[in-house]
Length: 184
Image (cartoon, rainbow, N blue to C red; front, side):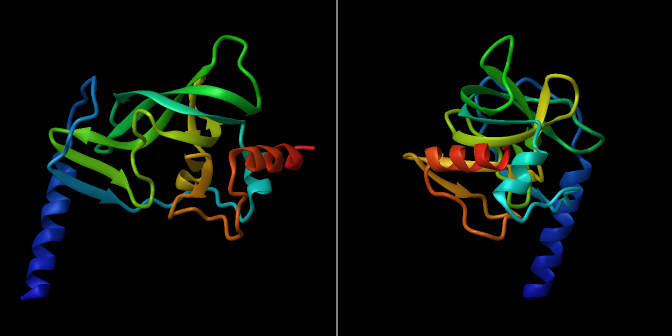
């Protein structure tokens, strides 16, 4: 009986994944009724914060201020986020203190599409992001969830899917210092 339920659930996820079409603007963060989880494989993997620091084009600390559903890539939903930079740890902007961050996944027709271990960013989320530049002016976290460090009440933590195998510093200041030291 449990095997039958699991097979039906997997079939429903597969059908829902195929049904993704179109795109729309997100003014607020929609509440989804279903979730479809993808299982990506990332081209990069980093064992240490230092390795990731040298690979990233820019490293920034700040807050997500806006969310927009991006153009789908085939049947894959995407989102773009406006990230207000409080501190440029690596790199600098000559134009403003915001960067556009691309992420695989999004909410379409009451369905949340998300990559395993890489939850969708949310407006108000504070983070330290290790970013690579894709299209000019549009960035993505390096190695998926590895390039995104959550900041809550000044404490920093890796996301569950991070490939970094060693402990990381626990405060924003100590992560900034470790990143800067790796770049020297």
